[in-house]
Image (cartoon, rainbow, N blue to C red; front, side):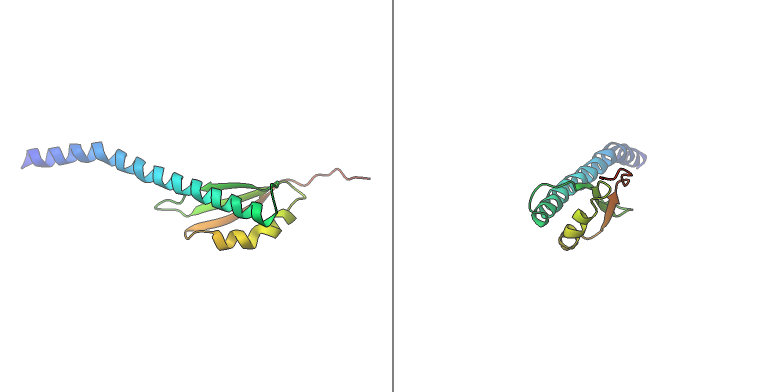
Length: 109
């Protein structure tokens, strides 16, 4: 009986990292698909390429995922034009985060 328990423990130690890595890889793969979908939605809403960068952090067992839209300072209206479309494509267990860069102090005369 002791040999069976020892073999089970050794097998668990060997297979647990493989299982964990598989779960992590699937989460990263899903985040990549979500990123492509959200990027397509932003491009469609803005009629082409824009200054909006899309990043996705995958959800895990203990935390929610994040869809991050980043835009340079003074260009926040780009996000305003696309945020409704992005929200309709936001998956469950994902939060939308909007980041704007620092505003420029330089003004055109």
